[in-house]
Image (cartoon, rainbow, N blue to C red; front, top):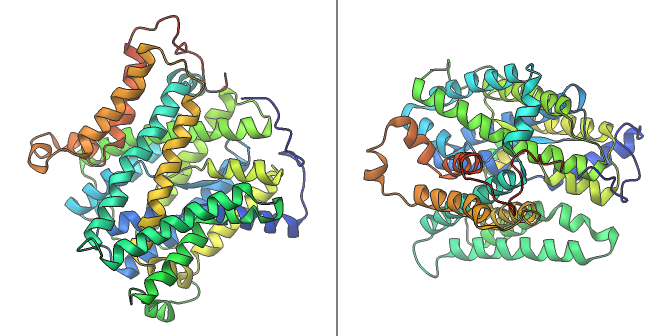
Length: 444
């Protein structure tokens, strides 16, 4: 994955004029579904519009800061950071059981651990050894599969019958997203903006449909201020629960699997080799970004592979553009009216789009696995984590509560447990001649 992509016309270290940088940065921001993750968490925790707005706002700020750190002192590649789906289940369980202050407290020690690992030279080599394509692809596939019931479940709960308007709105939003994705992929180059902005356009269209059913209320937007600076520990002084802290520490390591896949994706598009030093720098920057996020009230961040696609489409890989992207994310996070507008969008609209997003996430995993030999051993490494994920996601509540608290957090949502299963199975199952050697990293 280190061959130079012929579509790249502006290299990583080349300078781009500020007006062009801003224009391209706006495309990067529009291509991201960065607001969906905090909205899902807010829905799982039954947050008010104001609390949801704060979570969205601070996640945007944290993502912008982490992006700038990643480009300047981290991988030094055009990598955009955004909130990760992986901690969702555990954070919802911790926040629902102990409160938001404990949820925030659970995030800080693990983030500091990741930061510390970024200063250990051997970490880059260890990550390359632990995360070959079969693991990275399986983890991404597991994430997509485990999120599908979340999206569908929230739609079904919102609707109270087969003909419920909520189901209609969700379906229309999903259909619009598919339409924009297909049109954007097949249209003339000038119309590829449809693909870049597909999620945003679908949510806008879904909101219009929801308005006809009287589901839209933007009154909170008028009351929101235009500017607000980030606060420190906005949900109260952080509380630390040992089981929650241990759970999130492990989940942070799983998030690194997701980020590592993104770094190699960007390296493949830009023609940059992902060395041990690049990975170590990426871990360090991500750790700092994940430390800042809970302090100001945001969610943990990870690399966004979507933006590697934007680079391939535009042909511009300049770091200056990504720094501008980080700046725009921070600016948007400082405008409560914007975050309140996002928080006021009906949940069924968000979930309708999210259904399609989960499919895209899962298929990205399948794409990575396309280069993996399908031996019996490898099929088990890929298939068993999917089974583990589904087993966790469908486990009855009374059975789940019989397990130790730490394990309950992993079971919640399923994806973390499935990711751990992929890592462990790849290490312990004997390799055969048709299997990809475990020491072959993603760059191979």
